[in-house]
Length: 638
Ligand code: ACM
Image 1 (cartoon, protein in one colour):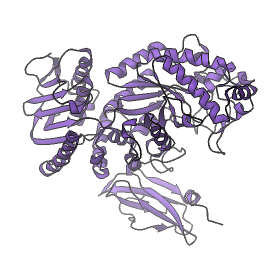
Image 2 (tube, protein in one colour):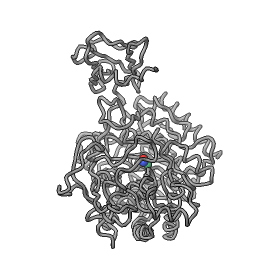
Image 3 (cartoon, protein in one colour):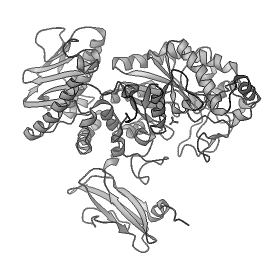
């Protein structure tokens, strides 16, 4: 503990020193624990040599680095084993600094060369990621860039993560993403030291993984009818429409993905969402439901199948649940979990458990008999009975059972790990009972939410801005911090139809979560972070990764003052100037500048708003009809 706090102190000191001595900023995300900059720099020579031991794990780091440098600089890069002098030395040195753990590293750059030391290969990999961020942005290019001075500043960095679980969830069930696309997603996440990819592999809209002996899961369950627009509002497709939209991963694909992820020090957490969200399984094998007639169902193409008007749990319009009173369901789960356990080396298997409708179970004679036999008092206890049986299956394969926080309802399975999504409450309750927890609350970590104003983002249920995401703190005061394994951000893809949009939704909020999960709590600073985020944008552009510029867009808040609507404008990052018009023309910096809340001129039809930094436009142009603003007003109290 003493060691950690002295490192932290050093970190705070070093940034101060750095800001006093250097004109050029260093924009590393996540912020390293300790960074001391000295004068001078090191320039990559015409031929770059990398010295490292040749263990399999270290080889994946050296080939990653070699490939990156060779591709972007066009220089030749030679691997030199343990030669005494090399341009970049990667040294495994397990005894030197135990406090940095298996993922920490020390990066030293002097005018003579670059040395990365770590206790394990993962640490070397993260040292390489930091080194890449110190190189000019063109290092992210996919082709050789001429005329760049490939220099890095002299620094000494000591760095290690705050949490071992640094995750992103990618929902490949709502829309299917190819193996190549998932690899691209992994490539982007490891730049920011994420080490866990949670793949949501089965839902109402598709079953995405080959299970031998259950062929209909992928022959039937992986395909729907293609629709674009506002997912959830579509008309049911005609019964005879060909179902060709979707796809699945063969077991060979999964092995390839697992290997690709492992070479980048990423674990893949597989999720099969049961007993709700299971329409694709029910359509494939209708006998798994409690509902006669399920053989008429189709994999969901975005039509309405749930009534949410009563809150949680939702009421299902068609039965998308597995039947907890049917022994065949447990045989099915055993087959699926056996193969999942063999395919994914990660210790945990996620079995969903969220948003399970109970209305079809309530009508089922089989469920009534199960309740009598097992003494189950209500539907939550019925779900808990299911979860406990599934936990036993998972444990029989030598794995740990994990689920969304609904698995607490009706009694938590004895060793279950809880992923808390409906705020932090479920996580706190589970940790108080001694269970391991991963925090991924909607309030801070839901990447499917809009990152800015609904007039400019594609509409979904809620908004989560970058600055709010940055406020995520996974460890609540009231619990044993050891039980909070870490956190993750979740990208649900109902409204995400392609990889560019997936990237847009992930970045830059994924940077905020990455920093929360890696950097010391005490070093968090929004103003400093938002500047470093701006430093990453040109890198995303070089890497051809999409990102949202929403943090530059104006924030619009309406309120009612004496029956008149007032419009308040502000910005997430400061200082920006806001200009607006009510006359349907495009404002620029010669238009009225926002200084105080506005009222709408008589007959005005819309407000247009833009932000500037100095004399440069920086946000997108926002146009909002006045009728839309009026609709946002809280309803007057009767
Ligand atoms: C969830 O967002 N339904 C876990």
